[in-house]
Length: 126
View 1 (cartoon, rainbow, N blue to C red):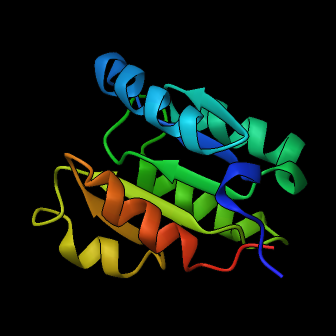
View 2 (view 1 turned 90 degrees about the vertical axis):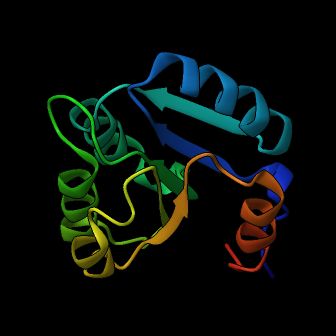
């Protein structure tokens, strides 16, 4: 049986503060908890400590210190849980080949929140 959206724990990684503020308001209305980091390195460190507490990772691609590509690769290399990873980016055309190799769900910015929630609902997260 999958968890309802309202019970999900989200790790959200976005360096654009204004974008993050907007998204955090929306995410916090839908999910039980949302932890935000501004770079992939801090998010990965948190993931390593709390992997079992995280249901979904949502990340941008272009960030300082560790970008979204490296974050996704790092998580996939160590994860035993296989939490879904969602990439939200304004650069899908620029990174089409790299994105297809990530085994992640990709959404364009600005995020169509209704479409996003519909796809998340269908993931069957335990």
